[in-house]
Length: 345
Ligand code: NAD
Ligand code: UFG
Image 1 (cartoon, rainbow, N blue to C red):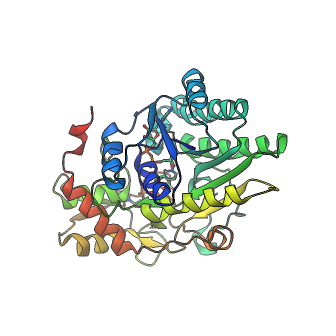
Image 2 (cartoon, rainbow, N blue to C red):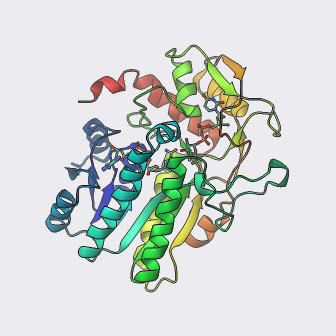
């Protein structure tokens, strides 16, 4: 059985569908700090099966141990953590506590129960900024660690902790997935990204403009050294991303010996600008997305996207969904779930 920490969240809820489809058994462990049981109810309807879950915090070793005692947990997919960059600057201790301390507590319990397989959710944010003029798609070997905010630093620190853990005990089987920019939603339109507050990220913001919750989108700068001057990112459909976790699990299960933790980029290998995303969303929703060009957002990088060839080589995974599909599915989710936050209990 796989323990899915943070399985009620945005990426976790999509991943459990794909794990179910692939025949894996799992149990979700979540403190619902940024999600609700409603997302598990909805996944349950999609897969037509009850979902095993235990409410708890990864920092709470006592509850975690009870879960490991109760179920025969062979591996962990570790999504649980906080992820808002701006909030991490305001509350760094809470980010280091949830993300870094939480992961250490989880690893301690795993070790105690001789559970040594883990897939960890890292982020492209661990890569150092590259001068746009010298930019080449980011490879797993590209330099990392010059992070610009506590969230990014927490991801980098966890990667280092996992590498050290492996050095101390090479029976651990570790996969670190570096996600690029996950967007979109399940095709059913019943689960998706559900920000509590004003969204910081581009896609949820565009969706809220399309649905009339926000008047216009601020485009943070059009004077970058990119084709149309706006920021370029590697957007990846969350269902493609979810499928990468199944491949990562298959890979870990097939490993007899491993030489080092596996680190893999999960992106499409393509870059799209803010204006391109607006255009794609307008097409998908048949709505005008009013926008204003404003100042650059502090800390933003002009352009980055992945070299995604290693994922194909090592995991046999590559993204298949286009930005049009990402926008169509985001739109379907947004228009069906205008007041989803009210369903939180
Ligand atoms: P999310 O907030 O939707 O999901 C995270 C889940 O973890 C939530 O259900 C939350 O309630 C739970 N959680 C948080 N702290 C916890 C704790 N201490 N104990 C137990 N549960 C806890 O976020 P997401 O977008 O699904 O992201 C999942 C993972 O992927 C995170 O680690 C995130 O940092 C990483 N990631 C996300 C993105 C992105 O843009 N969404 C990009 C790169 C990496
Ligand atoms: N943008 C706007 N207006 C908005 C929001 C965003 O113009 O209202 C622009 C940004 O300037 C950037 C692009 O849209 O050029 C994407 O911005 P996001 O905030 O959606 O994504 P980021 O790449 O800045 O950051 C995200 C997550 C990080 C994560 C990183 C890599 O927020 O946590 O992807 O995975 F680390």
